Image 1 (spheres, rainbow, N blue to C red):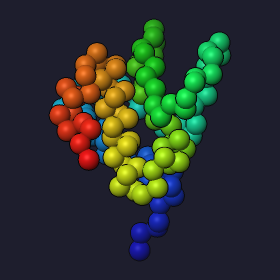
Image 2 (tube, rainbow, N blue to C red):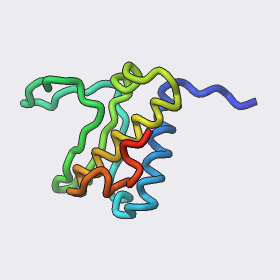
Image 3 (cartoon, helix red, strand yellow):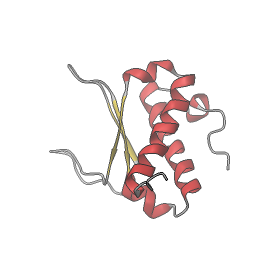
Image 4 (cartoon, rainbow, N blue to C red):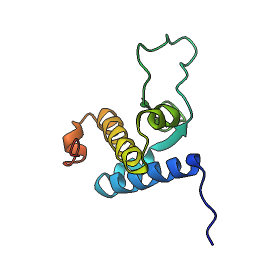
Length: 115
């Protein structure tokens, strides 16, 4: 019998599955790091955001690849069902990839915004 997954592990799976879908269409994403953090915390010197972000792009810097982060707890608070969480994670990743690549979300995934 398979061991049941924790909420955190399930969330990681949502991100992994979404990233795999996006990488098939956008191979350059293989050079991007994807991460899940529990909650957003402002970096040193940054001010608190006006609203709680669901994701973030951290541009590349010398010696560091670009990184896209999804924040687990804010997503879980907004969506109660597994299907809704997975769909929201995919939309967040589309938006962050669009920002990173300088594209519109529709260009990243033509099904963006569909229910």
